[in-house]
Length: 216
Figure 1 (cartoon, one colour):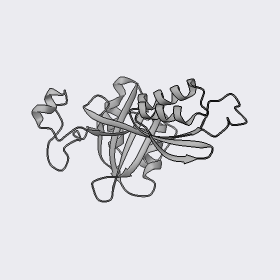
Figure 2 (figure 1 turned 90 degrees about the vertical axis):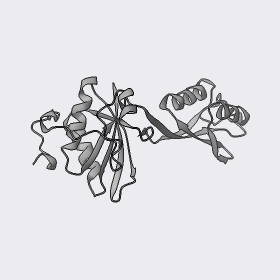
Figure 3 (figure 1 turned 30 degrees about the horizontal axis):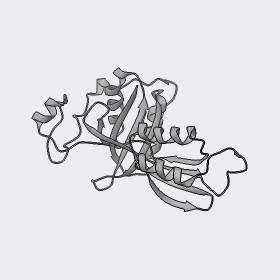
């Protein structure tokens, strides 16, 4: 199954490499990874989507804490969170179908109608193409791509950011308990991150012959 982790890490060179190396050593595939600035100075926010067994989520989070560059980690797959993805889609839409796809649809009015139905925006209009911008759940983006293909349009390019996630609201302990997450603190500095796990909860290295910097 897919797990979504939000990690606050120090904004230093090589941080992305170390996180990716950790998942490689654990033999866990990263489906998507986004990195950007956070609300804390000199701290970056990473949203990591990975494919792993259901029982592995807690130990993956513990292994991320093993890196000294990690400040906080939260697993939001099962919590009340807002999860969104940004996608840019460039569709062929010239006066004539593209030569390499002579049977492709090229009606701009139909693309505008589809964009309106899926609440996508037209962000670029060129003589031979239209670029759409869409923000939403991954399933919604997949739906638009599928409809465009099934309608006979030729998709020239697709660029997707991957998931970005954030817990809903600043909840009291009573609300968190009702949501099934009673162990999350409500202090002003760390309202959305669980307590740091114990060292014996770290996930074992699946590649014992590989020695990375963080293992020393």
